[in-house]
Image (tube, rainbow, N blue to C red; front, side):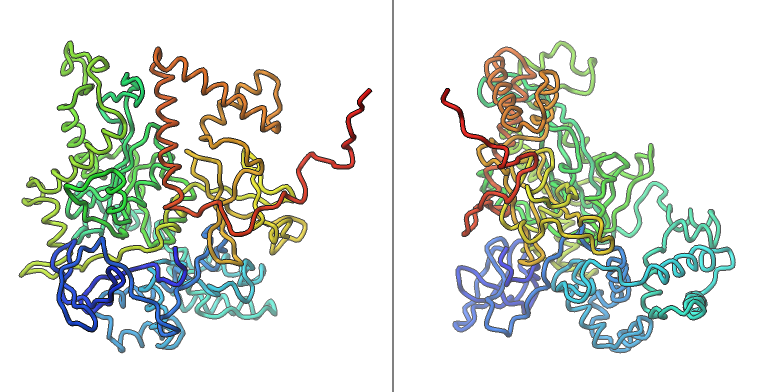
Length: 634
């Protein structure tokens, strides 16, 4: 992403936009995918497709620079607490009805113990980016980056007061708790924490457990578990989105031999208010945090470029935007740190549905049922059981490849969006349009902002690992190295000097040939390749199988060339067996799909290529150059 551009493009009346290097002003929203615009200078009015427009030109210093990106995993808990407290303070002002209410701003400023100007600055920053990290203290990294904002002694006093003074059945007020914290700090001759800092900690720790301790379990249940078969507060598009996986009931074939490779998994996201399918991710791999993250990023981002890749021009999918609440079940892939931190960054309230209570996810369950019912019309359908299937030979009749199934699903959703839905008495797309643009009796919420920082968003929703950076680079199953890591080699921990600092590295399990590292100096993500660039791109599943075979053969896992030679050998065996066995064909096709995803990385994610060539690492683990001796000819 161009760092001179803001991460969001708001499309509303009066907004400045560009199209084919010409500048326009939005006159009106003609539809959910069309705007009526007036060209600057000529005053000519034209209809423009939303997918073809871009942000306004950057002119000198008049255009405000966006907040620098920050690596989510590198932000301290104290800084997140401050950002979340600021987000809650400005929450009422984010409603357009109150956007010019100075009285409300003054009230919030008094509660936050800051000036009105500060409140408006927080509001403008958050509206420009839509990211919680834009409200972090010291966003540019100055003044104690990575260090705790409070001393350990003061932090311990605040925590003890919250647990044993505030969160009791006496229900002490916030003001009383602040006074008690400052009294204890004064008695201990410690620097008194600011009242806003204590308020931020109290806001951060609000939740079901606190309500249960202060007001009892019954009150906590009524407040935090109110759903009784229906979902409240889904009054607008993107208010609540549900997501889940299912194994599609149709057998597909490989690209080469057109023979069965069993079934594919799909992850779907549905907007509860309008019932539109907001995003999807099709995969031959079992559900994981990666498939969940891919579906969420697909739901948030516009889909014009993705549909062009699929060569679908006969229809559109005009649905995008960051959801307010995300409902998921309690599956392991939905409970990881990556999804939690990414949702926190994009101001998404993540709700995990209660275990064994499917009524909490009824909308996504019905959508998956609708898709499954539609697939029964295809050759190779497995149906819902032996009685329905009868004597039908699903494998023998299978004829659709993975890519053909993906295109079929896009066209299926295009038709689904335009058909009447019994639950809303109109079509999902009409309901989506009404919710955004409004009707005679109800105003719309407006078009959601289009995210322009798609590279960052995709990486944020990828799994990540925390590792130290050594002389040899980084080790995550395989050794990785790039010159961009040099300034961070052996960086000490900001609080414990005897330890090394750990940095987050994101990775796509379908192609582990690169890591994605956030460089705090350049304030952007870089891709970090294998240290040995001669090694081929592989998936994590291929590497794990190679490790298993290496263990059986007594080959050390640190001998990367030998391990990767086993992968090449396994690929050759699978290629020879593909015509005979389904498992081999499926493995081969899975590699094909991973290669397709890899091909698009140059467009969607940071590229390994840099203007400065990468030099060899200064040191390689296990390698001693002094121990090298020339070969003896004798």
